[in-house]
Length: 93
Image (cartoon, rainbow, N blue to C red; front, side, top):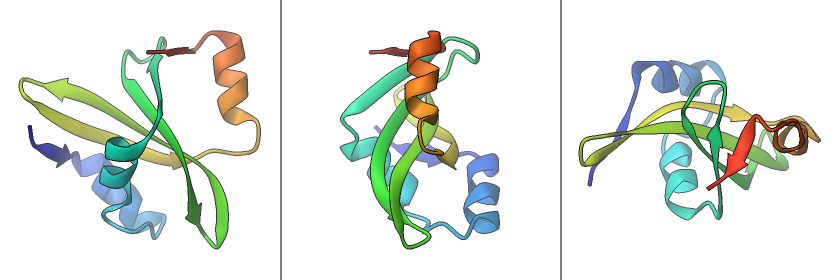
């Protein structure tokens, strides 16, 4: 299995000044995995230090044949993950 980056995530990494390997590390090491009911994408969430602060970071991805394509990365605001779980938008997988 290969982990690939979409053009969108590469743009986000540059715009948000996020370390290039962080999405891959989050995908490989995250213990929290969800399905986003609204988009149909799979989501991983892991705490990491970004902008000198520890916070939850989500990476959306999808399976493409035998590979995984990482679609976007987003630092979550306080309570954002819990709100998405509680509303039913994110379901644990």
